[in-house]
Image 1 (tube, one colour):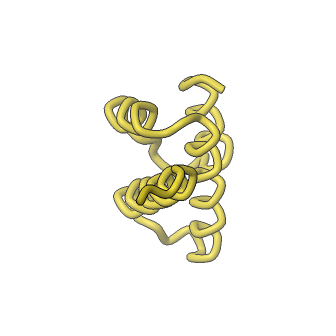
Image 2 (image 1 turned 60 degrees about the horizontal axis):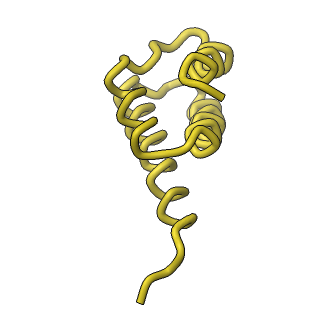
Length: 80
């Protein structure tokens, strides 16, 4: 899945919410693989619905980033 597919996914799942800016997409892509980003968007949608759609755009970005960071950290092998 490329960047445009991830943006399309965001728009399809959160059609009434602003999409992250290009810098945010570039940062996420530099730090995380597409699967991680896609999973985080899915988790964001679940949280968004739990909150009744009352989630500010900056909260959406912070939540998605937090999920991505956790998933990426968990995927790394443990170091001694």
